[in-house]
Amino acid sequence: MALRPLVGLTTSVTFGSHPERAYVNAAYVRAVQAAGGVPVLLPPHLDEAACVALWTRLDALVLTGGGDVDPAHFGEMPHAKVYEVSAERDELELGLTRRALDDGVPLLAICRGIQVLNIALGGTLYQDIPSEPGSSIDHSQKAPRHQPTHRVKVMGEGTRLGSVVGATELEVNSFHHQAIKRLGTGLREVAWAEDGIIEGVEMGGAQPFVLGVQWHPEDLVDRDAAARALFTAVVDAARRRTR
Ligand SMILES: [Mn+2]
Image 1 (cartoon, rainbow, N blue to C red):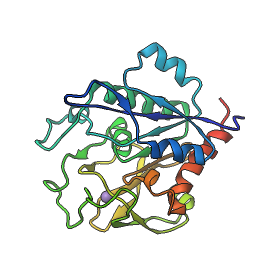
Image 2 (tube, rainbow, N blue to C red):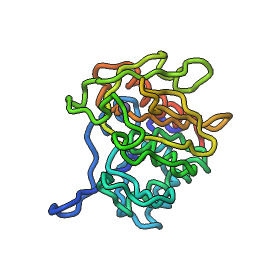
Image 3 (cartoon, rainbow, N blue to C red):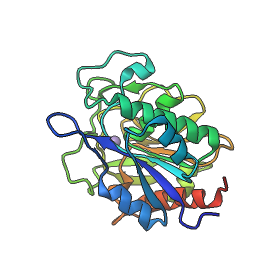
């Protein structure tokens, strides 16, 4: 039993004129540590052998936020608003997600992560919410990251998300212009914004810990017990697991 489980955190890559870098917002690192886990950053530049070697040591996986997944992964051409597509990152994250699902490694999928999880299971996305399906809610908030801007309804009864956050209504932040359209195989939707956009998913049945949220709990942990509970839950699930 790992007392301080190793939690893999995927990273973003720079675009444009910067030298190429892999990075992650420090809020993820702090949130995993505060929950008792040891964050292990996973740059998309890992080669296959390094990835396999690391994977056998990881106790949980957190998919972080970032740019868009190439819509080719769900059989579509990119909408004009699709941005910051990284083939390397897509490949690493889709691969790790499938490994986590196959091996029963606890998985928390955040923002872009919930979209990666959905695509890995054969689902599709709205490539740009304002274009389709449209919404009265601004899911790309201009307010600071720690500030909630819309409400999310959580299915409380019989759901993992409901039991983790201990609430049927949450105030969340929102930094996404894409959202789940058709659900991936085995996923169930368990949280929604007031416009019907899916904001939370989990695996049905007896599948080990797999949770996806469309908001950014790592930026809410200082003010919100539900946000802290998400990180505690994935670290606890990792602790309980022996591999
Ligand atoms: Mn939202």
